[in-house]
Amino acid sequence: MNLLLLGRGKTGSLVAEVARQRGHTTQVVGSKENPACAALTPDKLQAIDIVLDFTTPQVVLAHIDACVRAGKNVVVGTTGWYAEIERVQNLVMQCNTGFLYAANFSMGVNLFLDIARASAPALQHGYIGQIFERHHVHKKDAPSGTALAIQRTISEALADQSGKEKHPNLEITSFREGEVLGMHEIVYESEADRIYLCHDAKSRQGFAKGAVRAAEWLQGRKGFYDFKDVWRVL
Image 1 (cartoon, one colour):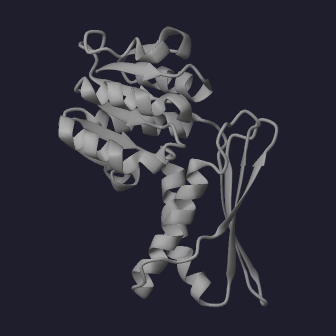
Image 2 (image 1 turned 90 degrees about the horizontal axis):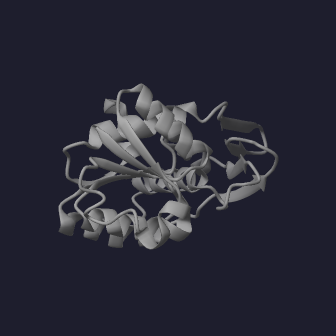
Image 3 (image 1 turned 180 degrees about the vertical axis):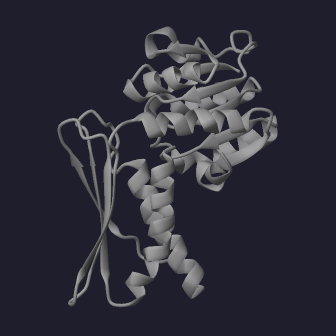
């Protein structure tokens, strides 16, 4: 495939490297080369199969809008834009393109979300829950998109089990320190004991591999997808 990667950060650069290793032609564009979406015109995107975005919450919506309107499939790993998710979904359906997003493309994190879902009944048996997340000092959003996904997963699991529409969300505590790649922890505590569930990223490799495999899966598809719904088939 011909891939266009938006973002020259550490994760984006690794995604580009993994894509090339898997035989894809990859062009990387940073913010200086893409002011006001100058690199995302229909003419410049003509030869591109899929665009992958790993930029910032401040610019990602403009990127999505330009690429979708140009008829290009898009994979988004940037977080911090989910308040606009319904509008983006409507745009994708109107333009008949393919779109796939995730708070985290790591297979391990998505397994962890399944574990989080299974752990939700603890809150119905006298446990109090909290979510802790730690990332490097350069991360721009807090709480992390992954922490919010954990919070949402547990809340939805409780709603499914009880039949109620809404459940109180677990409190999220965020830390920004050093060069921590990403640690997410769920803690359940009762008078009798304490339960720790933790995912600790050792490198960005898992995230990058998942993102490239997501792009491969999205090729030729139309529709709006969340990585949590497709990662098992990759």
